Length: 255
Image (tube, rainbow, N blue to C red; front, side):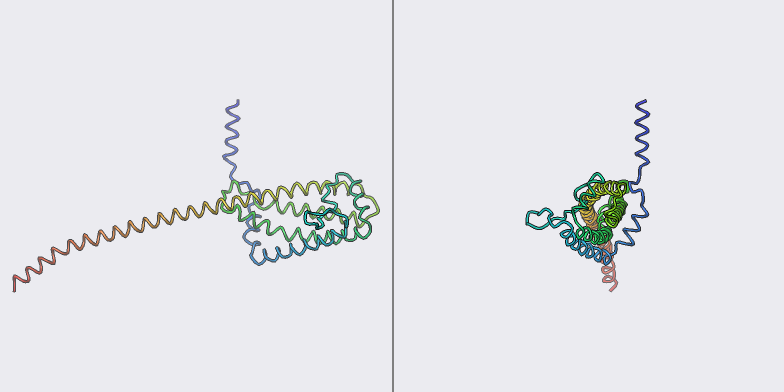
């Protein structure tokens, strides 16, 4: 019984040849969308949107916590991990009318930030695993799912703020669940980026070492070929030298 079970597991792993469930999607994003100019543009837009997010976050929550340098941190609803509808509405009530209006603008720039950052993250993952075997290439779908999930959370929060002070407990509860799931996906994406960088460094050095070995092998093959050619020329000259000497001696005798 145990032997057949182990054989079944072994066969399953033997047939497991690709980790990425959407290889065509990864190919489209990696080869057609990850253009240098587009990546630079999205990186600049990411920085612009992030600056605007921090600006509006200070309006939403002017009493937010300070970091080690005394600067205000990004301290808004989704960073407190609310778990119930009451907790969500307690935060919205505490922000006041001005804070809630600023939160709407914050959500707009946050959506732009999410869309702009997706392409650089996909680029890092794609090129990090590009030289890895197919069975360990995860693809870029996780970053896309994280972006879509985060955008869905923004839509729910936008709806709750626009409808305030009317309470829609189900939507608020759903938003709290989306916030929890957003952070799980965020840390998974971050872990994927770290692993992709490790793979990029490993395969980069491995490729350099392989190229150096191939170059050394090619150099030795060229040296051996040159040595064979020189030996052949020397043998040919040795054969021609007695013949030319005999011809010269015969000509001298005929004179």
